[in-house]
Image (tube, each protein chain N blue to C red):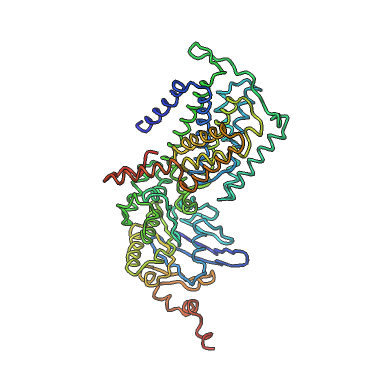
Length: 242
Length: 329
């Protein structure tokens, strides 16, 4: 049984079909890359799975149970957590407090929650910055903070929304290593990313969205050669010729 | 236990004030300061800690005042028992209000609190069979009480001062406890970014509703005390929008989201308000407004917030002072 399964998932905003008839399955321990041009519906898929937006059609099962209709915090309690495309730290709180908040729902005692937070910060290389205000971190540190916060919730599935956006080449390498390390810790990952080099290297499987629909799926090396995918990103050769 | 010590100290100091302040007018001012400290703390829990700005806290205060005075006049329940009942009543009333208004965020929430407050005021004004409408209620005699064999003199200020001093210190202590608690961490997260708070597993609606209930309990107790001390309750006295604003001002001037802020805010605003009122019969509110503008312009973090930051900077400058950032406040 797949860890996460979406069947016929759809969402319309007014007349716009942001996502339509999407079937998606993610296996335990997998890193799934979700790619597509701007406006393809990638972030909407994240919003649907994590309860920020309700689907207008279809079903989402996590470990065999529906998560449709749950509020985001309840989805987190089931074991799904996310990061945001534009980082959302709690800017006025310290790094430690940022992550402690995320550990609190599962660890009601402050000492336990802080221990869990330090562990997550350690995995993201942020120990030693506990007292720094989140607003004073660099962008890559804020992205790591956001992953640490996601880890502190004790997830089974993490949805990362462009964790490498705005990073330079060497930072992308570091971020790729972090994503791989999540799998090593037994956490399944869905990754939305535009940095193709990273997607190709770390994804086990890639799903390509275009206008809210799935147009290709498979191992990364195969998907990049798919004619439909190339057309979606660059326009069709036929149209350009005429 | 170590955390409780400063509060016991503050409580002892507060209770000792009447030994020093003999003048009834000054003691009256101390009563006002303590009452507004409690109300500022009530507002600050929601507005400062959770960032949910309410313009309607007068409704919770007013409900508390009506409950205490009506329990006494209609059921003979002494006001000092009425005060906690007032707090509980305001908390209960706040639950449906919270569940309705917390669907809205930011300015929409704030405007809806204003609407709820106006609704409560109009109900009190027009439901004459229950509330006596604009006439309100008046307590002519308080019940005789003997403490340690001596009859309590209800014409003196001391019994009232002691009541509100204990309430105010307990109110501040409860906000200090809240700040360290799990709920307090959730509120800080909600204040900083509500979506991110949900995304890390915080039930934001539940946290806000619980906090509103605590805030309402404190405001309701304040209203109950008002009825006990002033012995007169009508819609203009306890449900006016100016009361809601006063709570906002006190929390802001003192320092949003700080534990000590409401006390500092109440001291400054009551002192300035009464001083200029005594000097200038007309237009004293101009000075009050001017003071507000100066604080907002030059100390947006409030007097207590600014003082704490200066202390921290000094502690940081004084070589390595690793314990400085959290602050006891």
